[in-house]
Image (cartoon, rainbow, N blue to C red; front, side):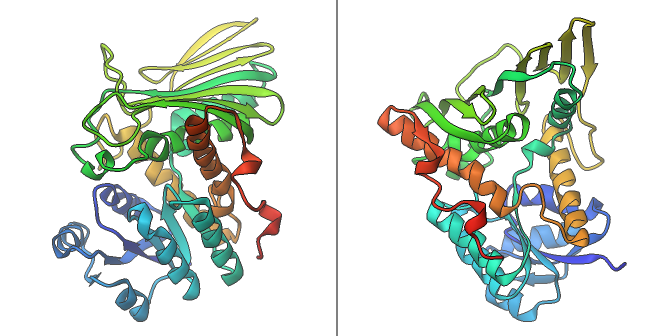
Length: 352
């Protein structure tokens, strides 16, 4: 079977990881790239040997010759680009957050559904191998029925040096990082029905919040805490590790710093090293993120070939984005917010 051909839109900071992932992917390759910045276009094109380079998305789609598009731009451009791809009948991957507003997100999902094209959000944290190991351990039944959990990402890492635009937005840590942790909470503990959130800005040099704590009520009577910080100074910097705690009726699970997975039950305590591999193009400490990029992109190829909906489809991601919107509303108004307040339409209401 011939390789699927892809086009990448956006050659910025993170897109290089995606290009490496596509080069490693079985069954797909990038044949075209697009960026408004000629220098970034040249740099990525030269590094990965892509000769078809475009400064205009209209020219990219006019020439065609690809089966899917990977949109790696900032959030303000997502809706117009996804809708453009849908009009051309092109399967689409979009960076997170899916959109600036729930209205935009729902419009994007509907556009792809009506066009009959697959749509996936690049929500890669749930594809990290340590997080997959947590899910597999829970599914094994060792800890019994889960009733409480925590997903934590606390760091003092300077994310602004590589992505200076993050310091300028009025919404920061929940929209940029918390969205990953909220998606992990959904993946591990199931969909949430309500959230209570508190935020704070510790760093005076940024516009948005850099600390957030969210209490989630999940279906199935599970309670979880999702906490994120870029203002936390620790003896050993954990970036970019996500730490997880799970309490169940038969035992406990802890994913701790250094990728140690501890399972405790009546049968004893077992500690396993679940550190992800360092891919040939990757380097610590980013190897955890880089591996997940490669894994989610391979998942996209397999889902596209099989004709099935990807795990982090646009439709699924509405539930994650609703948690982001509900968290900001909760923090602003100082109350618990039901997911029903912020998500306009449920999955069954979208045309396919």
